Each structure stands twice: as C-alpha cells, then as structure tokens.
Image: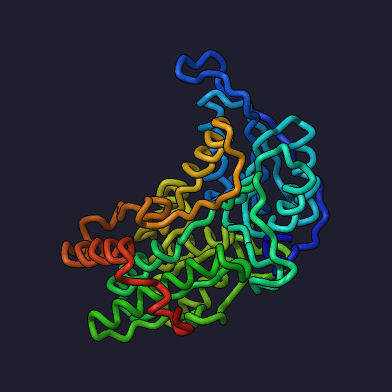
Length: 368
C-alpha cells in the first residue's frame, strides 16, 4: 500500500450509520453537478465539534453548490472498508475519507475503484511504500485517482504555543493526543516549538508536559480515544494538578472534556482543527484563548470542484500558513486582554513561518 500501515486499529465491530443528503433543490446559484460527492467520516462521528464536523461542513457546502451528496459514519475501524463500498454502491464518484486511521481502507479502494476519485483528510500519499524507504521494490506511485489532504498544522500550533507561553502564569503548558500519528502529533510539535521559540526570544523557561518534542508523550489510547469527554476531564485534571494552566488537547470529543475542565478550573485551553470557540459554544468556550485551525471544509469542497472539472487526483494538497490552509483562530473573549506587543510578535512569527525563515522543526527536541 502507498499509505502508511502504521495504524493502531480500534478493533471494535459495530453497525455502520449511513445517511444521504442532496444539493439544495432549486437554489438559483447552484447548477446541478455530474459528480456525486461523498464523505466517509471517522470514528468520533458527527457532532464531534471537530474535524468530522468540519468535513461535514465541506460536504454541506458541496450540496449547496449543486452536488448530490451522501455520507457514512464509522463506529469502529472494522467499518472503514464497508463504508467506502456502500458509498460506491450508492453511486458516489468522489469520496473523501476522514482521518489517518482510514489509510489502509482508502489505499485499497483506489485500486479497487479506479473510476472513483478519492481524497483523504490528514494523509499524504507515501511514495516510498510501507517501509518508508525510497528506491526499493515496494515504492508505490501516486494513484491517478487519489488526493491527500494534508495540513501542516504544526505551523498554526506553533503560533498557539507562543501565545500560550506568553499567557501562562505558571510557565507550564500541557498537551495529550488521542493516538500517536502525524495528524495528532503535529499539533503537539507546534505547541512545544512555540514555547521553545518564546523561551529563546524572551529568556524564559516555559515547559510542556505531555510531549517531549521528540516521539514521547501522553495518549488516550484504548478503544475509545476520540469520544470520551469524561476521560478528557480526567487527563486535564492530572495536568492541572502538576501546575499546567494552559492545555492543548488533541483528541476530538475527548478533548472537549479537557476544555470543560479548564473552564471549571478557571484555566485556559487551545482548541484544535476548527475554531472551537464557535463550535463548542457557551459556557465552556470561555476557556479558549484561540484554536489551531485546519481549513478542512474548504479543501473538501475544493476537491469536489476539482473532480467536477475532470481532475481525479495524482497530487497531494498541503495546507500551510502561506496558503491559508492552516490558521490561528481569533482570540474572542481574550482579544482585549492579549497585549498589542504579543499580537505583533505572533504576526511576525506567522510571517516568518510562512516565508520559511523559521521552521517548526528547528525548535523540536529531535530537530529537523
């Protein structure tokens, strides 16, 4: 397979939820499209107020633009292949799978259904094959019907890390992930790098608990890493008890529990994937300083439009600060409390990351 096999499978068999929606009938600006646009959501499901919901917004926008749309939800990893097959059977001609854990199923489907265009959120095609070594027999060419929708979210999280380091009253930041794969650890890398950059610029000694800037950190694991808010509250409280006052949870709806715990403790949090101040709503969004945001909805709709124009794939998309594929959300309740000086420093860092003069990996323990 061309996509990494390093997956931690949940191994939970459950019934698949399948649903359909259609483009808005009679919408004057939405000419009917020939592409049938579909999304296979990951475990955690709709209502996660996170990356599944962002992909759903992209699908809803496609419906408004005149696409006929369908979607499926996975209750466990054993649903992935079956969900894709059912979407194909429904007549889907462009399918977005959501989340790194669907890599095996998506890679297989590109070969089984060459006339269907596939994209996958949080994955780029691994040209060097499953062993990550280029130039040997298992190298796999990029399929002509696949687009990886990848996001350098570590860039946006580095901005959030700088803000968190400047805001922290204890000099301790905290993070954890649902499971250990790049779509998760890039957030954690960014938080770590932002704190280190702040330390360099300010002569400070802000530390990060839960991730060492290398490959070791705290992860939920188990059979329900993405949809256990009570576990998120527990993990947050453990970090707060160690002196952390700003937390950056990267675990879907589990992380929402940590944001609630921050609110209950009158502490602070950094959101992920979407502007969680908007998606979570009152009162717990009062704990959010900002969010490290992926423009997943925009890239999903762009993929459907690309297929409609006749291009089924063969390349990957990388969202960066430079192309607005990742971004730092507004400061909302804290807009007037964050100094003009810190805002200017964050903007200068954003520009430096965008033009390449600052690299996230330069501030990680493992280096570049």
